[in-house]
Image 1 (spheres, rainbow, N blue to C red):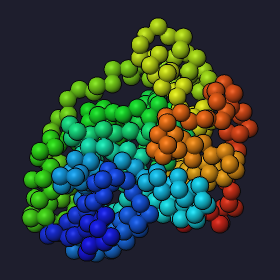
Image 2 (tube, rainbow, N blue to C red; image 1 turned 45 degrees about the vertical axis):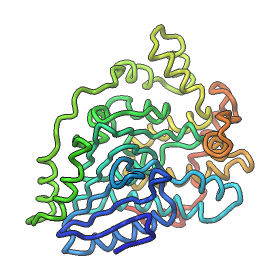
Image 3 (cartoon, rainbow, N blue to C red; image 1 turned 180 degrees about the vertical axis):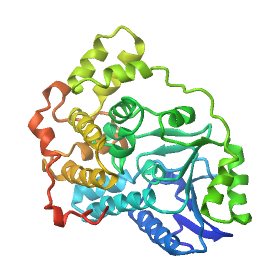
Image 4 (cartoon, one colour; image 1 turned 60 degrees about the vertical axis):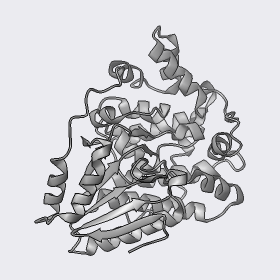
Length: 362
């Protein structure tokens, strides 16, 4: 079953194998890729001959090397600038895909090699087995482009230990394999050069059932070593504070290099979206995945349309990826100047409950 060429899907033996095949864009998800993934996963979910699914990325040399750098932000910028309705379709369908993966009902094994960011987290965090390698670079860097960690980010980041979720969501910091496992964002470590043998083995073995597929892969995983993030105590101390101004003030008043560097990072992010994101993560802690995705769908609509002509997201993508001047004109410009009412407006759904685009998610 071959799709657009950007998603390669085949059944080998008893396992459905998916390769993301858009290496020049680091496998950033287009609307077409989201639709292809949905089509093939729905078919395999209903197919008793497919016991489990595995997914990987590719780089310019071949399979593995890069998992998925996120959603296609150039498309998002272009569509948002001209009012292309496919922008709405993209987010709605992407979130439905994320929900399906979390609720797939069969083992779904994600080989999270190389870059795993944004939308790449959305198609891997719901996996029943999340495998990282020494090349894994994991992040939810959305505040750098005036967005928020979507694709279920509220749900999975808020379930990290302590206040790690707030820290990752606000700062957009990149973590490596051992950190990802320690923070409950990955399940096991596999050296990059052993991935191909495991992948090929999935298609060559006979398995009694889906559980046996996952168990066989589990036997190949190794210890990942010690967590490299040494600042856990500081993360829990600062990122438990009441609001963003309090967090940044405390970091800036601290004497250590980690705190000051973290404060400097936060000062570069969209002040408005930092406030929105802190609220998002804290609300999501008590939400189901479906309710979190509905909240995120509300948020993303507001990112483009709450303030016409003043989208933080379009400005952030422009500065980072389009003009590449690295000088976003955030509005408001300072963390201390964000009105509470504006933040609260992001959490008012633009739809009545029965007409919400994600009303059907359970």
